[in-house]
Length: 302
Image 1 (tube, rainbow, N blue to C red):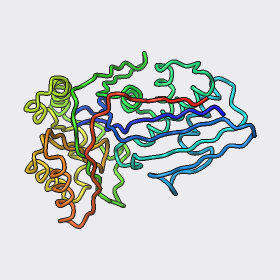
Image 2 (image 1 turned 180 degrees about the vertical axis):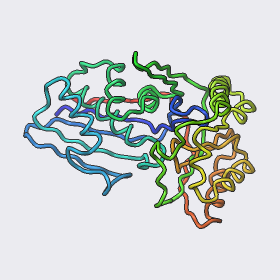
Image 3 (image 1 turned 90 degrees about the horizontal axis):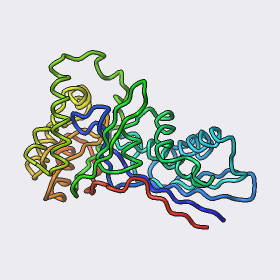
């Protein structure tokens, strides 16, 4: 039996001022196992995060991506077994669905002898999910920088110094502002200029490990002010993280997960953020994670 395992990291997009431009890969991973079988049956299993929510059929994001690739090439295996082992929470700002789409494409491409290059897969994944900065970062790891226009997608993946962060995920069943219509269609020129400058400084701060600059560069005016109001106790959680030693705190994508940059006291920061959420009646899960520098990892069993 031919089997391929594809491991894909979580990605937080925006990273403060880098709205729709920056992505940061974290060492929290989904693994997709694809294997050929001699029958004409498709089986899909979901384990871990998303179990009971994600479909176990052709409509699973992994299979949606795989089928898109099969259709592009006008070929497909006769029978396929897919097992999704998910460690990335679903729909909370950690790009879990992007990870599944990337994993599905990479796995399907490998099963067919790898006819597509990584750049081709980045383009196809972007067509499916519309988030090039998340796709690029998931595929290549590190700090992803992405821009797109009528000529295509332009990107770089920067390797940054080893760094650990804390992710706090409040349990908010009614948190819904994940769509773009939760943001104003127009913003003041001063806010746009603010974010351009801060995003540029943020890239330099992460590249050079200038943590004093990082604290300043994380400030955003384009999306966080409109989204954090839906997170109970947000300011108190940020203050608690700072008091415990965090350099700065940003929203993960559109939230509600939050990320704290820190060089020490990670366990104390986790506890402080949980405590601040608990003070407003919200339970939260936390992780201390390293920044991922590998991106997609593939292993094959013949």
